Length: 231
Image (tube, rainbow, N blue to C red; front, side, top):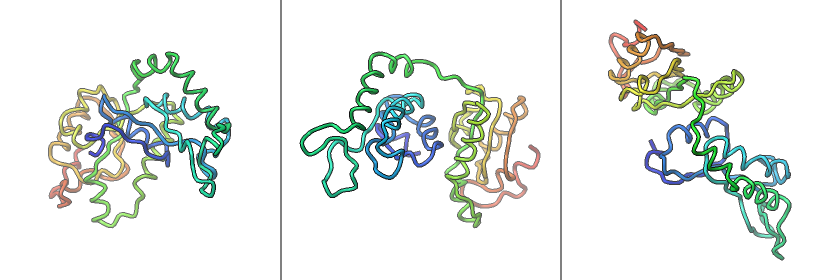
């Protein structure tokens, strides 16, 4: 929901799945990427290999910029800077700028304007279900769950897209040419979402759910009878 209103967003790469959320839901005019750079204790630290790799990783995920943290810092800080007090660029900065300059020779436009291969896999995201899990006391770390799905699909060499509960209700399952819908703890569903998923299955789509989906409305009130029993 937040990404629909943002023109720019630069998170930390706490997990690979977070980037897929941004890639799937960002606006066409969106500017964003991940923070990287001269961190002393994370993200590969100041290694040249990390700063050589990271701008290319951001580009490969569909991002149109690279954000280095940071160009200049306090002598007594954590050491996260790329330029010394006498304006000498450290190796991390030199390496990152070299790779960014290489990318800007034209391969950025080639990749960003190309159509991403799509294997027809959709991963359902529902903010209502996140709240329902809390309401019903289900002890699941939501971010870790999506991270596990991301890694599993990566191991299978499958590209996927995140799809929101609003998109499902508005018919995106049919418009997006999806073959498989993964539903991780999608407890809360509107009647429109339930009908869209049923239609998807009736048309030959496959649904993978780790628990009975749609046990309650988006408000959290339980369905009686449960809407997904005939899936």
